[in-house]
Image 1 (tube, rainbow, N blue to C red):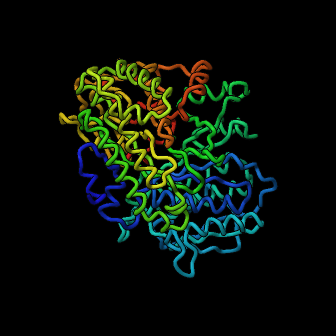
Image 2: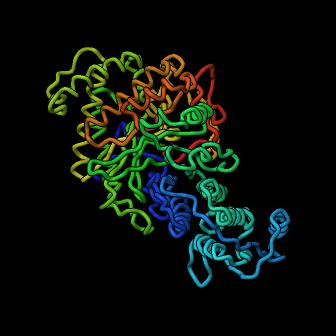
Image 3: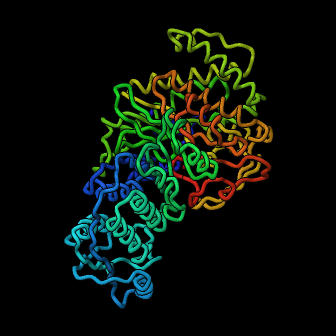
Length: 557
């Protein structure tokens, strides 16, 4: 069977950007996210801005790891201003911007109306680096943005201009970093780049997550940055068990409780190479690596169909990875070095509702089977030889585990080092139905309500009526959800090819030291959104307790 035809089979849930790429494999790539580790020198910092911009424009999200960065002393004191022809439609807006940011300058840097340099004039991305170097040398410069299209205009590619003034904000953020090169001002540059790129173009679902180690000398300042300073970036902290004895622990718990901080455990691969969490916290990558996602729609499947669906899904994903053309930009690791993908699931709540299985009984069965398998010398062989029991929850668990094992065999045949994750799937789930025609629920979590209204910046107002027998989060309870996530992580770990889970921490669970200890000792690798689950008739973006400017829709699509 042609690998692209697998996507039409029962139980396959193709993410939105992959659908678009299959229909038109030009321009935007099917990858969801990447990671950029920033070194502690100006040259790498400046080049990282261009990398992030390309990643947002051609992919979706970019995690920026700043663990190595230390504030570089003695920033340059060059001045910056902006030029715009009087006849430009945005001239008045620029004059107002200059009134608020007065300065003088002498050397002109002319910028072309293109993100990339294609002729004699600098493209926008290359101009950021040149401006930064000039300012750092103490040069007084004027950035001429007269060639940039007026805000709101659309070119032949369907790209909507955000206008010269919006880009002037990026140059100002860069200048402020050069003048005082501390961590908070560097974070503000990445946030501003994402803001401007999300305001224009046909795609507006890019995301940036910033990562700093809890032992970083500026970690306290990082946690205390006002949300307005990095309004278009999410904030994450890399931790280990030492956090429990660290002075930052109270501030970490406070930031998590307020929905302003994600956590990721420090992680290495089998050969000791460092791996870094990406934007949505479920994929671990090397620097400049990419992730490509695909999901299995459990709600559409009968129990006996699950193993084959996993095998088919992994074949599709590995072939997609092989044909995705990720080397075309010249910034990502090529496919033969990028040895990982991310196969996940959605619609678990639908599946359980259709079979009359409660979350609690499913978790109990899952834990019992996993405990037996972890004692076995060859878990895959045990699964293969196990006769399906009459108890439906255990049958479902065994089918799921068999699916993971069969998919793992495929992934290894393609040389994958990691292959399984549980992504947010927030938007993808709206595009699929279960076997009885109801909208599928995201990933493995129970829905917050049986009827949902979601206001998405990228996709507008989305409505869903889930299966009427679906249990809600309030009915399931956070403890069962926590144990369920641990079960899925252990199941993925059995394959030897596990990434992680985008693990939301519900408002039912207090963020206290007891919870931090439980999470650190668990097999889970990350925490994600602080999510409201109690007393809701519907949920939209405003109900999610995360102080970012909108949900992350990178892995969601």
